[in-house]
Image 1 (cartoon, rainbow, N blue to C red):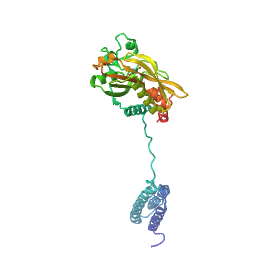
Image 2 (cartoon, helix red, strand yellow; image 1 turned 180 degrees about the vertical axis):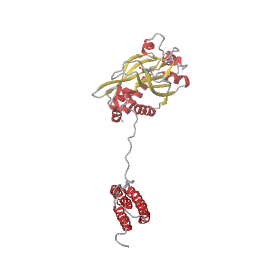
Image 3 (tube, protein in one colour; image 1 turned 90 degrees about the horizontal axis):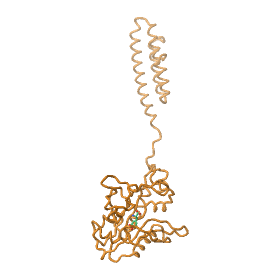
Image 4 (cartoon, protein in one colour; image 1 turned 120 degrees about the vertical axis):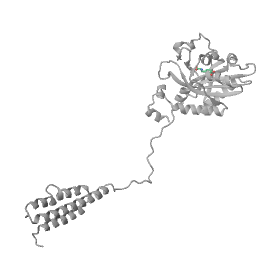
Length: 331
Ligand code: DAH
């Protein structure tokens, strides 16, 4: 076959194409090769142009040969493109044996933590946990607690009444005393925690919703000494052996005598944490408990007070804002 056999051009183009395709190391090099072969002015494309200058006799053989080479080149290109494309994904593999990155884990709210802790501590002192509804009737929130009809504590403006039947969001957890005595016989020791509601103006130390823990002990011969001993054991477990309890005479309709509970932090003064007293015989009577045989003490503590002291939280509003930056600091 002579040097100017047009088919030599075709074979040379195929050989050149094969070499160039095999040599293209990555997808972009291969894209350049593709256009140099089958692009507008590519070697194989130009062969087709060459067809026009051939004689009638030469055209069919040449044309058939060029088509064949073109298909071969196309399939070689496609093959190589697939393999360099895949190669792009072959890189350093993840080391699956390395420890993973842990997603941020949630934590318990400081109020929940405080509730769990105080319930646990009272548990060690023999108090069982109980609970009651947040929507209460007047009997449990007031009447049975010796708070008569025209007592200011029952004022519409001082409570969240929810309907004409005088249901209300409970204003104190002392309701639990009544609910317990209605369903259980002494001797008993219970605590209950939960939300209470009062239409107070919100500031750094007041909120319209907060939490209390209520305690009730009924037995034969219980006295203020038992009450104070219980409270002392409680605050010392919570805050340390160097704190003291001071009972400051006060008044609550459902206890007699009644006292405010102050915790004395050495060198830092007193902090009021709640109220307490000996259950008023009128309350025992309202619940059908024989006051000549049983006596009891009760107390109600503010959970927010305890939590704010424990976690050094300066403002009660932080507790309900759900600001993660705050919550992260106290968990
Ligand atoms: N219920 C009272 C309040 O919310 C707190 C309280 C005082 C509870 C004396 C008691 C108690 O059980 O004996 O202010």
